[in-house]
Length: 106
Ligand SMILES: [Zn+2]
Image 1 (cartoon, protein in one colour):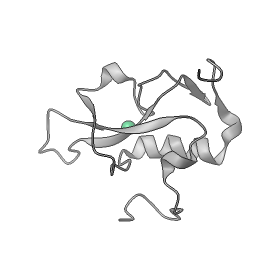
Image 2 (image 1 turned 135 degrees about the vertical axis):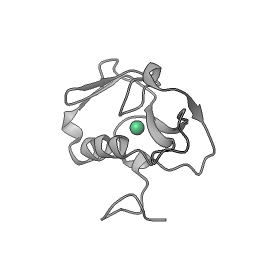
Image 3 (image 1 turned 180 degrees about the horizontal axis):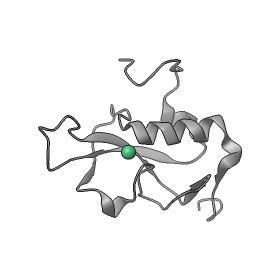
Image 4 (image 1 turned 90 degrees about the vertical axis):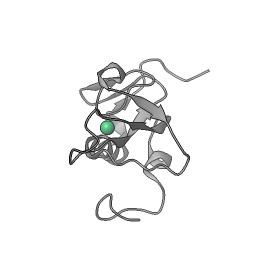
């Protein structure tokens, strides 16, 4: 179960993120393609990571509306989208680059 990259810590990516997020599975119209859907990291609050700006319910890699379909799935989901993981790891490695314009959640 360690296909996400080298040096994977025991804590999950989500647990380490400096903002609230969960996993959602994206379906693609081309399930037979090499890239048949993926588990994306979906933020639960407005957040900026460097130049990336995401609103609640956007995935880290893309804005929500640009997905063909995003569905919250089982709890065992781990992120599998390379781009989401990349951005999440950057946020974890450099929490100073993460800004929450909306401030503290109610
Ligand atoms: Zn993604």
